[in-house]
Length: 53
Image 1: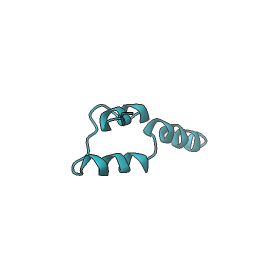
Image 2 (image 1 turned 60 degrees about the vertical axis):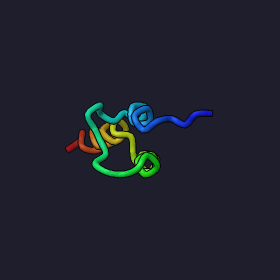
Image 3 (image 1 turned 90 degrees about the horizontal axis):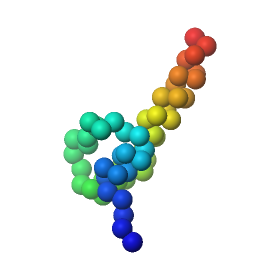
Image 4 (image 1 turned 180 degrees about the vertical axis):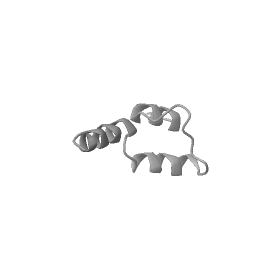
């Protein structure tokens, strides 16, 4: 069984192609991705909340 690579995880979560982690080992970057929110999902939430403003 093969683990997904950082770039594959980032693409699956919808991060921009030019997004990079300034520091961190592979393990640390994978952990950060696991604790993050998918940018497209958060964009949709914020747009929904601010649509009535």
